[in-house]
Image (cartoon, rainbow, N blue to C red):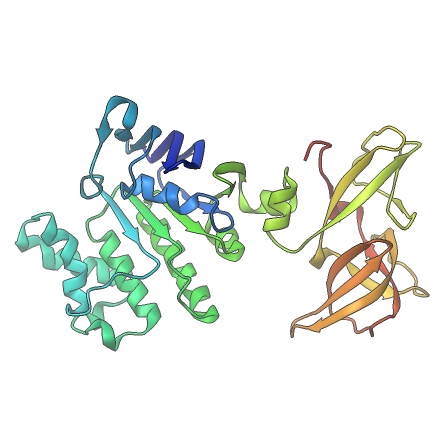
Amino acid sequence: MGIRVSNLIKVFGQTTIVHGISFDVADGEFVTLLGPSGCGKTTTLRCIAGLERTNGGTIEIDGRIVSQPEADIFIAPHERDLGMVFQSYAIWPHMSVAENVAFPLIARNVDSATIPEAVAWALDVVGLSSLAGRQPSELSGGQQQRVALARAIVGKPKVLLFDEPLSNLDARLRDRTRAEISRIQKELAIPAVYVTHDQAEALSMSDRVIVMDAGLIVEEGQPRALYRRPAKRFTADFIGAANFLTLTCRDQQWFAPDGSSITLAQPVSGKDGEQRTAILRAEDLRLQARSAVVQSDRINTLSGVIEHIQYMGPHIEYSVKVQDTTLNVLDQIEFARNDEVLVTFSPADLHLLSTNN
């Protein structure tokens, strides 16, 4: 039955950190709470875990109410039947890998005869069976993180919670570990809530992403929809390299700041003088010399000047000045600073926000 959070409120002192948010996590679903530092995502996770007492609202796990201050209900963390992986791993340095994984079962007074089999299963799931006898000091960061994951799943919990578990790993190891976490979560079909400020983690791992800011839910949806067609400017700005272009309506036609007429994938009516914000992803834009022939499918063109160049390996990152707007463009073609260029894109690459976003 997953997780249900209804009108959750958390206050520290005189400051409200979480402002009455609500969301569900279905059985087997992987949901990420994504947002900047201080947005309330970690506090929300800690409330679900029972590490923080809530000030209002209801939290249910597998159909059981575990927190409801209005009814004086608070179930202790160890009684919520959940597994949690922390940012710091929290592995006991004086215990072997197997002893670390067994610890939650021992703490719950599980029949000692069943513990070795449960530990062997958990270590097999995370691929550490051969390292059961090692000490934490003999493990790499990625191996330690997998020990923490094995410890979280060994009791076959109803829910898995992740508090920025990859932030201490290097970039390449982070990529491998997030794939491993996704595989294990899907294999076990356990509902999971994952907290991060890293958009790549959120987009690559999640069935659904909940974007938070200032203790509120800004927007939620599937990763591809949030990236390609966000409803809110905050979401577009936080997820990916977004460009914002102000379009002005004249005679039912939209115009860019440089005066270029813009063709939309679907007609959008507007009043004369009305302005709307358009989103353009940096990887959708292409550069070409002003004298070059425009490709037939990239009929929207903006005139600009190269201001800044960064070589990134797979692509070059350009900053292009278009009137008073600076656009970030990712391309492989080489230009020099101060070159006059055309920025081209197709109608399908442009997403127009509604007037109140």
